[in-house]
Length: 167
Image (cartoon, rainbow, N blue to C red; front, side):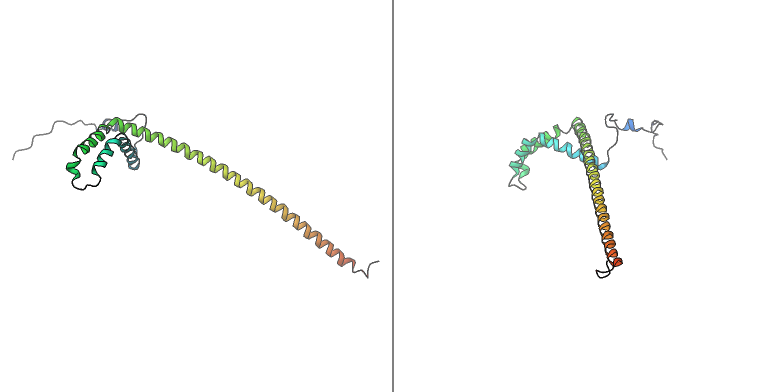
């Protein structure tokens, strides 16, 4: 039985993340799949914006057609695809990633500003509540004093007797 030729010696060190993937020094954190999807959406949106006129030409040609689009609009379709490929570069994807990170920072700042506004409103509501409780407490004390005063007057009239017992 004949043996298969042996493989040449492979490097003994396992590949490190820096060798398998180019590090992005400006944004070093890996993105989650959802975040990557958002970057891709932004990337494709930018390409569609740049090729809007070519895409519009293809859409105008394809309007009202079904299967015949394949041969009637072939030139417009090729022009649209070549335009999209022209803007589907690694540099454009990196630019979209940078734009996404800038958007993250802007959204984070906006969220922090909203949280500050909410905290200010919360403090205002707490202060208004305290004032209202103080007013209610003062009012309750005033009413209690009036009731006690009325009770004292009433008790005083009972002690002194009626008009026939007085003086």
